[in-house]
Image (tube, rainbow, N blue to C red; front, side):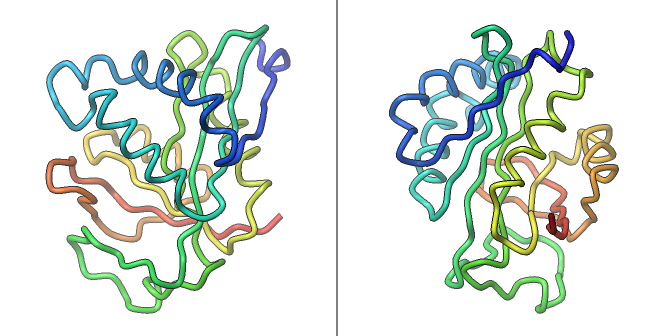
Amino acid sequence: MDAATLTVTYYTAADLPGVEDRLLEVYAEVYSVQAATDPFFTVDRYAERLRAHASAPRWGCAFGDVEGEPVGYAYGFARTAAYQWHGLITDVPPDLLAETDTRTFALCEVMVRSPWRGTGIARLLHDELLTHRIEERSHLLVEQDHPKVRALYERWGYRPMGVMQPYPDAPRYDSLLRTLGY
């Protein structure tokens, strides 16, 4: 699919009621295999996380469609000065953990439906989302059993920070950081 036909719309938390069904629909398709065997990846559990994330400060979502058909999205929120790095498994230098209200953007999801993978749309959605950010850096998690995805994020400028398990029933993730500056 030609990425030039992509339309990206930026949403904030105030928009979530109108777009939540579309976000859940894309998620259900992208994570259908994992959801069939792991309760952490079910749509209901994801909807809980999505709503919690959207209730955090400065939630934003870059949603892509091609001729009205959803292709994917990227979303995240701002961490506050009160944020605690729960779920860290590895030791991390304390200076990386210090937060302010504008230090870290938590990039929660970058997902693209199968027909559009490998077209550059994931990067376009990621980059569009980050153009709306005021934070100094972006933080994301990638499942440890997805080394190709981790390598992709590293090509985008993310660097390893440590290992996290953000929820007791979640998989272990590699924690990656990237400095922002546009």
